[in-house]
Length: 342
Image 1 (cartoon, rainbow, N blue to C red):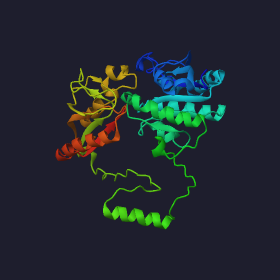
Image 2: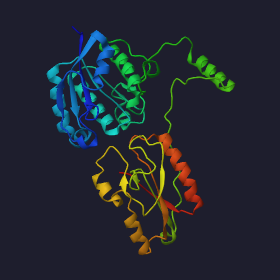
Image 3: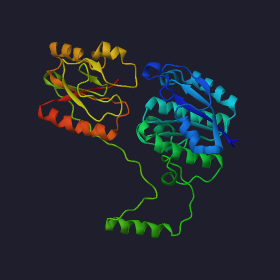
Image 4: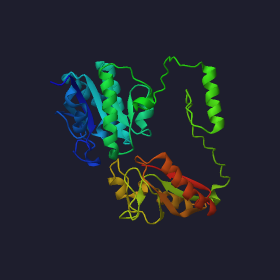
């Protein structure tokens, strides 16, 4: 018999219930392993088994947090597990926040180990990194084969109450927790060693990494809006019919340039696209901007808009897109940009 019992939490996608069209499903408990749970149980071998899998739609959880948490807590409690595992959620924002919220609740209410996995840019990381062990993953499910061994390795240490080492060694995202440590050298010697390495251009690791803040200087105020040329940019995925540039629904690798009168649908995943497809102006308000132009409240509208999908798209790619189209907008005399999302 396995030594440990696991309860696993996944969303509707990984349970193979469906995509965004099924994100409304309420929590349900299934016996045994489902989806990625197969790989997790295999990684544990004979040491543990997944006794139940909790499935919940991302939209349902985030729109009914208290009700969903109460239902899930009762389901988990009935199984009396030794550990609770959620995800991994990779860079899926609502899934990540759900995994974090459920893990925190289970840890506080049942006093058992919990663990999840996310990409470093998942919003769930910022919310729950101080409360939980969140194993670092790639940004999409293609990283499952790397995520599962890391997640299970740390889960085993939590179960056996072994000492959890630093984030780099164990593979979890930094929590901001500081613990006493006895070093071979005093602080002054270590500081000098780091300084010498830095001066030589050699690799070194700081003992206390400082946060990096993205500071953006605000643009100058527009003196006369009636003469201003305004451009539209969106991360809401609005594209011409058929999505000619094949912009990805998630983790976009490209940004498209289109005429403002050529809006047909949204390429964005992660939310119900029905109303955006029915009327793209709901996401990218070209109609309102044209009214303002007719009324003389703005000078003119830039004839093209730039569009990508914000669902899981990395900060690195987002900065690259902006750097490319911003240069063109500046060269064409654009005075301001209205940026819309979903």
